[in-house]
Image 1 (cartoon, rainbow, N blue to C red):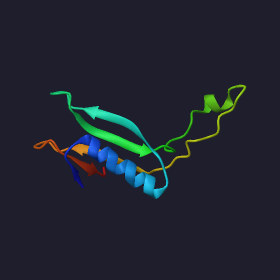
Image 2 (image 1 turned 45 degrees about the vertical axis):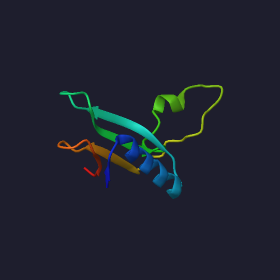
Image 3 (image 1 turned 90 degrees about the vertical axis):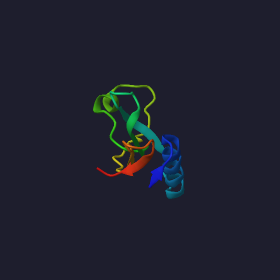
Length: 91
């Protein structure tokens, strides 16, 4: 799919995730050195990854529930070089 702006791509994935039954978060970006424009944007499921072990073993008064469970749902939005459009990219 092709999007005119980065925000349109992010909104598409957020709507898709809501319909599919999960939430999203913005994970990371990569910028071009030449002009500072965002070339890659990663959008992942909010349960992607795992919590660090020291935080799990600490002696806290209030323990937080485990929210990160290793979900692999994600998309990468990539800037098309000759245009100012973004596409969904699967590496």
